[in-house]
Structures are given as C-alpha cells and as structure tokens.
Length: 138
Image (tube, rainbow, N blue to C red):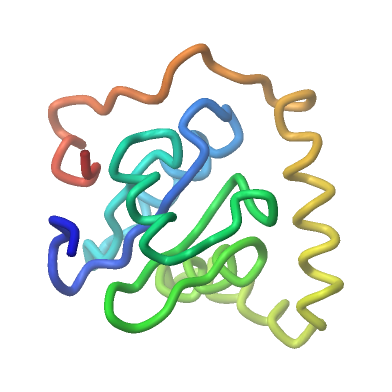
C-alpha cells in the first residue's frame, strides 16, 4: 500500500498547530522504545493514509494513531493509546480510558476547537532537524 516502516505506529498530526508540535516534541523525547513515526495531516502521505483508512476529516483534524495492519485511533482514544506506549508518568493517562469515550472526546474536541486560538498556528508544517528526520515520514 504505502511506504510505511514495519512495526511502527504512525502518528498523523496537525503540522501547523503549535500545541500539536509541542505534543510531538514531547512524544519524541519520551519514545524510548522508538515506537512512533510522524506524518503531518497536511502532507501528501498524510492525505494518502487518511484516504486509505477512509477517515472522514470532518470528524477529526488533529491527531490519528495508525497501527498498520491492525487498527487506527483518533481523538481521545489516540492520545490515550500513545500515552500508554510512552510509559512512565504518561502511562497514568491511560487511567482516563475508564471514562466514556463520548465524554473524553467532548473534552478533546473542546481543546482541539480552541487550539489555534490558545496556542497559535504556524504558516508551514514543522521541518524536522537532521537528528529527527528518521522519525518523520514523507
């Protein structure tokens, strides 16, 4: 299908959102097992993955976790699944999975709806440093 590394979980994120950028930097810093790869939703590959999965971009526009050949998650489920794989203090975020998905998605949607107003927006997607280029798919 797509040129995606085997055994990696793909995080599709809003490449122009400052909050999303900060979250990706945090994930990279704490991804000790090198589990994740990153793709901006706005990129050609991001759009191909979204189309392949059949995701309605009207339902989510900020984060999708794709586990090729297995499943995909979006909104609060994606955030909780990512936290679970980071371990450490982030693992405790998975305790929020006991909440009804509709409730956690309501909170997620509220933050996502206001993210540009609260955290700002870039003109272009993040360009990774040479050290981080292997983490980003193009």
